[in-house]
Amino acid sequence: MDANELRAMQAPLKSRYKETPDAATITLRATGELDSAGIACKVETGRAIATAGLHPLTGGSGLELCSGDMLLEALVACAGVTLKAVATALEIPLRSGRVTAEGDLDFRGTLGVDKGAPVGFRAIRLSFDIDADATDEQIATLLKLTERYCVVFQTINQKPALDVVVNRAA
Image (tube, rainbow, N blue to C red):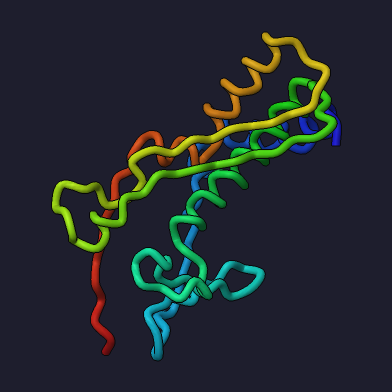
């Protein structure tokens, strides 16, 4: 896909969203079923069932997916798609690229060993290795716009309002 094809595909959407802002709002949903036998949750991904469980450093077997890894994978996926879309729109041809996310966890917090240890990632690093004929200025713009428009990056960077409820089975 080139920049003109991308613009042509997105133009009617942008026009619609300017005229009717509510049309741009969507509620995405993820669901999972608790595993009846083990400490796991089966998440419906739209393509398959992904079974998440405890990380081995918290007592898991390592056979299930770690939700922390899944969070980083979502960041990599979103940042990669966003970078590619921005590069296409700016007509910066990319020969190849790799996106990597790393996050530091201290499982003492998760396991309640140390009340002062954080529960969750204390640091996340996102990096891009790209092969492109582009100036330093173009690369800086590409990175700036990727950060700006990556949904997962912005969600992590700016904590959204969170609401948690429990519904009892009837």
